[in-house]
Image (cartoon, each protein chain N blue to C red):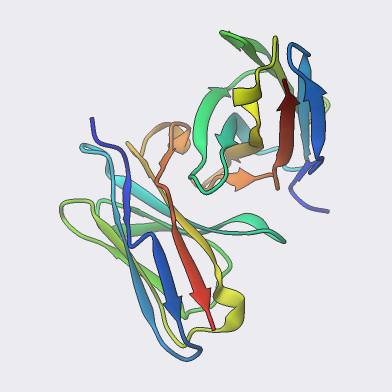
Length: 114
Length: 111
C-alpha cells in the first residue's frame, strides 16, 4: 500500500511569490490535514479537508489556503510569501473517522523563502 | 499556557537503557493521545495511540495516560541506536479533528 506522497520535496522561492504544494493521500483515505513545522513553533495545524470540504482550520493568515479534489488529493497554496513562511510543510492522511487518531504523514515539502 | 508541553531535551542515553518521555496538557477536551517518531529529514511516523487512562504496550514501547493529572508518557525498553529520533506527543478531542502536538523531544541512544 503506497504511503502519503508530497511533491515537490524541496522548493526555493522569493519573497512575494506564491507557491502550491501537493499531497496524495493513502488510497481510500478521505481526510487530508496540513501542518507547518518550524524549529521554534514545532508542528502547527493549518487546515483539514474531508470529502472536498474544509472541516477544520488553524490560526494562519488568509495567505494560506487549500483545496481537495474528488480523488482526495489536496493542494496547499501560499500567496505573497514571507521569509517567515520558510518551513517544512507536512500533510497527513487518515480515514477521517475516530478523530484522525491514525494519521499518516508524508515526507514533507521543505520550503525556503529568500 | 500552551495546550501541550513537552520537554525538548536533548536526551542522551546508553544502549539498553529505559527511556521515559513525557507530555503534559491543559485542555480537558483531549480524548486521544498519540506518540510519533520523527527521524531527521523525514515525516512523523505514528508509533501508537491510546484513548483511556492506563497503559498500552506494543513491543518495546509502552504508552501511559493519566487523565486526572493531564500527563502522558512513552517508555522505551531496551533502547537501541535506531531509536535515536525526535519523539512527538499529539492529542485530539473536543469538537474538531485537529491534532495538537508537543514540540518534540530529541533522543539519542549511544552504542
